[in-house]
Image 1 (cartoon, protein in one colour):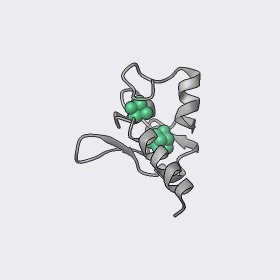
Image 2 (cartoon, protein in one colour; image 1 turned 90 degrees about the vertical axis):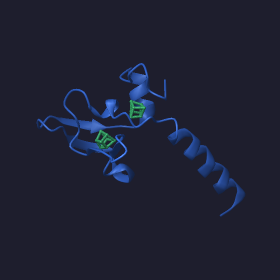
Image 3 (cartoon, helix red, strand yellow; image 1 turned 90 degrees about the horizontal axis):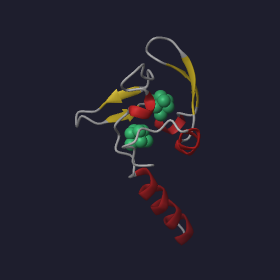
Length: 85
Ligand code: SF4
Ligand code: SF4
């Protein structure tokens, strides 16, 4: 791996680590995405994280588009305690 690739990976890891894995942005407290799962440590994760972007369904069957956290932030849907605010 080149130095540039290592630097980019480090940046990405730091950015990802800001997520508290609360699951709120995936509908935890309302009508969650069918791909939102709770881990043994009590925190939440996406079971298809690497290919999450695009159209999915909530547990009640509503269709929605999963977008990047930047887009979620821009449109104002992040909870007050989210690590990306
Ligand atoms: S609301 Fe923020 S901290 Fe919680 S899972 Fe979503 S991105 Fe992570
Ligand atoms: S597909 Fe998107 S909305 Fe669904 S759990 Fe994964 S990250 Fe959350």
